Image (tube, rainbow, N blue to C red):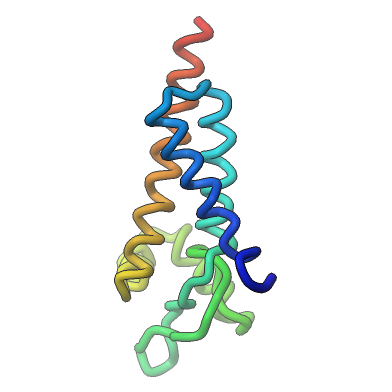
Length: 127
């Protein structure tokens, strides 16, 4: 994707923020949270941050917080870091590498929190 097409999730995230402040329907908030989370975890431009052989973090571009760069080993390493608890420290180190990555990480976490709160509120409202 080129141009603004690779930043479509930011529009969904802005819609999510507006939805929360305007009191949108809970189902809309759940959908916007899910769409934003998919964008931030699997498509947003991000550094790979997998561990290289010399112990440094990979600075190649990747798609999403959870995905590695074009190197197959880095893709597996990033997935392994998210699933294995002792890899969380290394993954966390890469999530805050620059101000842009920090904002992206916070936005990804906000979408998860928003989704969980929306689903719980939807379940409570249906009972």
